[in-house]
Image (tube, rainbow, N blue to C red; front, side, top):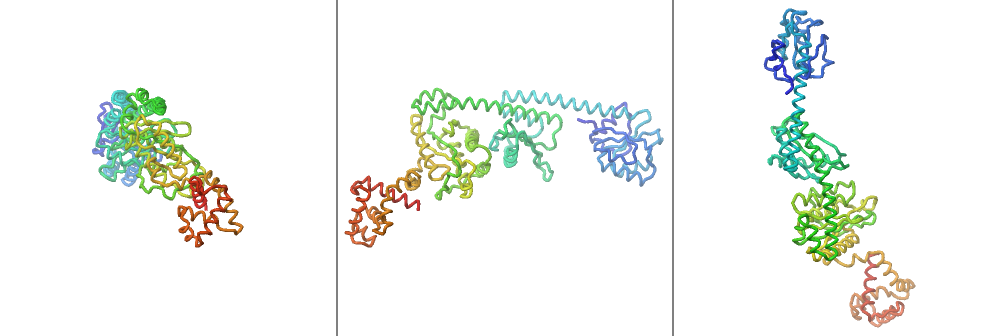
Length: 553
């Protein structure tokens, strides 16, 4: 610990005597300073032991001494050393009384003790304290390194909590708590998620202090530190203590940050290698070689292939090409998904990767994530945390998307297609299902579409495709041109006849004309188009063309 007034009083070579403030000798001394100024306060920083001979002080004036001592105490001076036998044979009573009234420790310095000896003693104790702190810091570093190698991040957190006499917590890239030490700190760490999110918005390395205001009995002081060397932090460390960290504790925290950052960066390298293995496994599954894929997957992904899984295909599209779906899902997104959706910085595919991998890591399930050119392919357990997190994130994006944002353009939007649950032998079919769902998501203006939803929807929204519109316009143009001359309402007649499945009387009644008139109009349709209405394919094409033109109006 740093030097205190008590340690200086007990120093056998200094022979100091306490004349006032006996109950405040345990305060630390930052430095010993000599000043004969009548007002040395402008040159004080706080924590000093001020040494004087009262050369320029009227030390016998009670009012002057009260003002002098009060200003010293207000400036943070921790003690006053008065040299006797120089200007005064003993400490004047006015100064003693003023020191007692203010509670400022007053030390009598004998003539044979030079001020230099006191300064050297303070300096020596400060140096010794710093050496002890550095030594303790190196010892803590060795212990933390040992725990990191043998116990992983959990062991490192336990060692760090013991070193700082507090608690420690590790957060993943999404701000979720990964591990805490001791275990009771989990609830306290969970309350800091919002603070961790704010820390992640700042470029790494970043740190902040939370709490420590002393407004409640359990209001600890928490330091948050980002981890990682990239622009965006990969994770965060929280350290909670009852008071500000000392030098030794600070060394321990910095060592933990370095070790956890090293672990994070090493994990990124391992993740890249795992990703290459995952890409090979995916290629084998899609090539119809599930057994070879299972062999390559080994323990890393093998468990993922033992139960039904879903294939997720995601890509980005220009926001200006996205139509907002009026029939978008009405599910309520989670708070975590909403927070992730609100963070629009960076690549949407990278954000989805981070969310899926974090969810899988928290639940302890395997997930296979493979970047594939301009898209992302994910193989995840059906009903697992990764699929759920993907769906919640997509729902949050759907909720955040507005027509104004879509019309504004500029940024890319995420589009996701999900297959039905399958096994390894049907991986190729699942990939096709995911691509089909992805295509429908693009056409319908959805962020997220599952393959099971395709059959529950309608084919009519697909008619809004530009190619379908062009076909419909070309097919029906002769009829529209005919009607424009006022020679008959062939388009309306055709629509009524087809909607009544060729029933002449019902269709004629809908139009308010005689059935013979309707028969004549249908013959004119055949003559103008050069097609027979007896052909079911022709009737289907005409009906779809009428629907397409109606949806475009």
